[in-house]
Length: 450
Image (tube, rainbow, N blue to C red; front, top):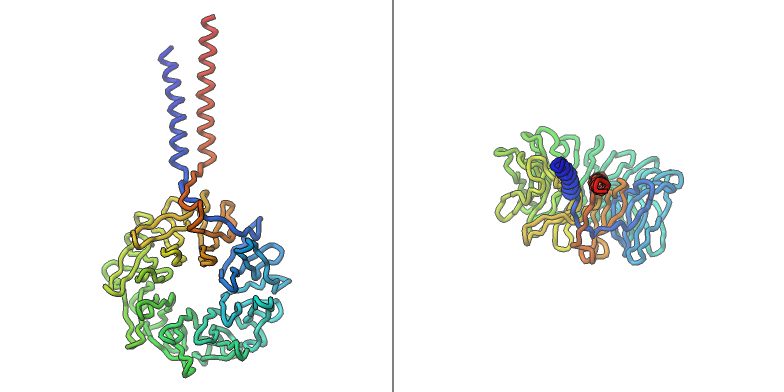
């Protein structure tokens, strides 16, 4: 009988021990320095996008139930979030491509009357107005707003020439067709990037396919810079200036995947950077210059999508760190340089897609904040404002709101345990069951003695 009692205690204690082990092994250990600074829509997602610093405040596109998608601002000095204007009272104006130019904030928006047009906001006077002169009969949809030689360039459709390259001069208040690259249709200029005092972009002239083009503001002419795919479209994108060259992704005629290329304006040399033959290397998201090298997310067919870098001095590419070991990949994205480090969103296979950073001085990548311990937060739209990192992320209720990370916060470096409520219940139940059995045995022994 005594042996049976010992076995009973042993089994119950083992169950309690297993529950405790499961509790701690499934606990999520992570830093806790990121905070939500604005919960614009408490019952759903505000989904702030196009975060842009202007006149000491942070402006962005966001939605609440009352106004839908409109222009908002966050003032770090006051800690307040304010609707700038309800541009479309009957729906969403959906301001896009927020860009600071000539002391004002420019963007695309739809007021419900004039269609999607070019707008600007002046913080000094709180004046908000749309800019006429592109498409008087419908949507002009100005995209990819980019400042080049004191003018604002963008892609737009005037209803006559199709989608082409346009410009706006704040001094004269006039919009002008900069180049009609495809006289018979749309050229779809995109990824506008300033390099070598020219404006580079991808476009389709109707003959060469969608290739690399450039525009010279001095001569007012656009020309084909490089025809990468002689048999079709190369789709150059992610244009990034590095080491006096223009780097970008594109597909050559013999390759189906997007590969890394460079263009040198000094000698008009087009160079294929990465040799795909040995292992089928495929470059993917966001080229970013950090600490003298070009970082990006790439997949070598072995490690999955991970953090890579290219060094122009040695002309070599290498895997920086395998954040999610194995072939699954961590899919790093939304790169930004902040506080001397490379910040990004990535998934290590344990915490979900969360905020990470990489320090080249110690060659180490680590989790910065586990914002959503229950799942993943998918941080993005990173923007530096007031010496802090602002971004959009999902909370534990899967609502996407405005967040902030301060590397100098007193909470930085502190850690928290997040326990699963079901595992806690198992521990409590096992402990109570063991206690009940022990108490029952004690009472039984006491009664038998009497």
